[in-house]
Length: 161
Length: 288
Image (cartoon, rainbow over all chains, first blue to last red; front, side):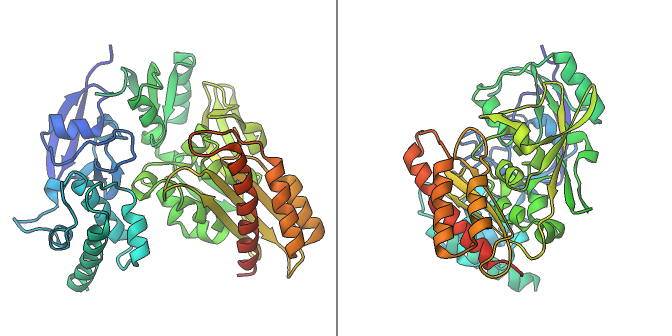
């Protein structure tokens, strides 16, 4: 019987600890042990992108990482995206441009878009479509999401120069 | 809780990883980026007694270019390769193909060594290893050996690595500055595995062809080097008739299986079509 492992990591700027079996997936650890249920678990094999979080500054599928692999990592989940009660420009754009309906894919979509805009701050529409192809949405038909990411890119470009 | 129980080890060195693999006598799996292995664990299609995680061995992540060869530590992330200037200059074929590997959040974790050791015949990196005559460095209890692409891939998801060996480095010959390269791929959705992919390298001035390199992804149980099609171009040049003949030869050289995604006949057809497109696009990029 594998021994439980202790895990220390930083989530949304706060030091957190937990103890679980080595086979526990990072997404289940975030939801069940850290009780941060904003990260959604969809397909559990890396296709749908709903569970995407930011690990050490880069987007990654939390269903394709073991919790034990996140030892010492800095993680950003959807709960950490708004600052001081104010939406991140991406969240504001999704609200304005109908970038969500049921909301299931939204946490993964937002964190994927956050990473995408960091590596490509001035994307074309085609590049946005390629970028968000990492996450499946079954409600919107993607048009609202593409508009929202485009609007957020322009807003972030304006505010950060 | 998806995967079946396993013991987890995160060694700090390759030697320690090899010793652990020996201890489990074939019942342990090496965990690299996890983007293919963890889904297999989640579905319980793979139920190893132990996972040997290489992610805590920093010395396995590097890109070094010297003597006309670019060497990649096995744990170099696909994302690092995608944004590497050295790769863009020396191996533009690899830069282009990397953007077709899954999606950005997959490439954050996925590694070059993991992709090649996993040996999915639809994957891009094994096809590039075959096209460029690359080799891998493998380390085991008896020491180190190098394995050429043609000796590495045996069948679907199977390489000639022993169960107590670790793939530590991937070596790809740098592409001559004047040569043109292209990776053409057809998949149902962006980021999916290729139904057929073609890697092409073309060198030579005008309509002459001093060197052609062609290899497939998705056209059989292992990547297929299309040597007889290359020879047509090297002998007859890059005119329309020669390219059409090479594309037709390429389709004859493969014997793909049918599956839920595409029939064998369709895959053969695509092999010809994409070979022609890849050759033409590689030609157009020569000398840049």
